[in-house]
Length: 430
Image (cartoon, rainbow, N blue to C red; front, side, top):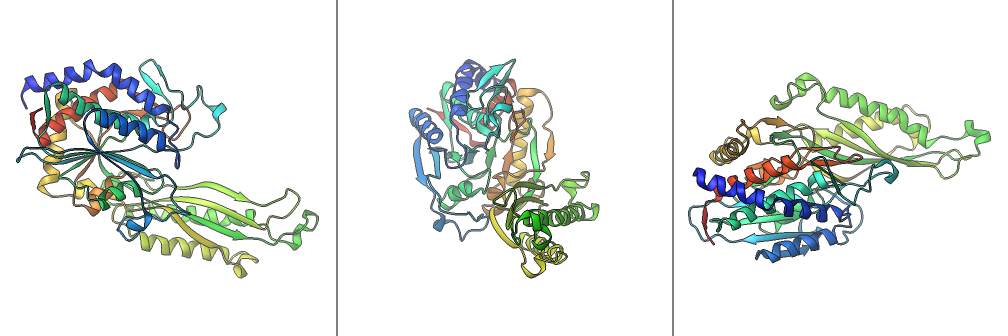
């Protein structure tokens, strides 16, 4: 790429950066938690349509994807789970196609009084934008869109097909990205600007969600010894799961990307409910669990061991051994994915193109990182033979209070993305 084009694209991002911040603020103000993404998707579709992209907006149909590899089970029907894709069709014959993917859904806020300012009233303070989802990952959606805008401002468009995806369900299943694959959206590479501080993600963990349902024997608390407390029965089961977590993290079980990490796999008890009355021994308890998996680790084998651990622990309880727990899988059934293990020429070319783009903007070498979370990259890398590059801005407190994204980092990522698109797809005049 010529220095002239690099400078023009960089200048175009700078010129539009105030508009980009305003766009991010508006997008962050939409409270797009699961099931409430419609207004944010309507806003995104409108912004894409105003730029002349062909719009594909559809309601996800579970029956169309439940048979596909990578599907995660859900409890209850989908209501208003809508994906949006903006489509650019390239005229060139030599360019390589690209998916620009990002998720519009955000996690719940938690207690509002623990935020310094309302989570869906974004504010800018000392170079950071604060608000739920601003970092994870609406700043990434903004960088994808305004990178394309930079090309347009230079009188250029990608010479190959580009599919701008704004998907739902990333935070709990990934079924939004899977629905895009089922709809036929494939490309030579995918770029997902998740907020990992301008590093490229070389590997990501898998994630498994499940619930454990326990029964107890209710009685008046005055006669507690004659009953069985379902909430207290959960405690040794949770302890047994943590012992399993420790075994899975043992050095001999770690793949190369995670060999340096003592505790890459995290088990989290995310929710617990139980009982009906303070003075009654609780008759029921349900706790929700998230467990990480290494790339290459079998989900079926993991489930079999989880079930064995829970049942063995339950049999140590006098009541539970005759009323064994029920395990319900819902949400993430996500395999791990390692870009580092993709030896294809296409993957090498895509990484090299991103390295050139990052260096061209920052002057620094592109750092590589194995992360202890999951992203939608697995769908492209595992099920569509498509190298998936995860590269986005620096953010802090994602999923926490006072989530924030560094605006200058978003600027750099936007510039690097514009250079990457021009290099990977090629360009042609508008």
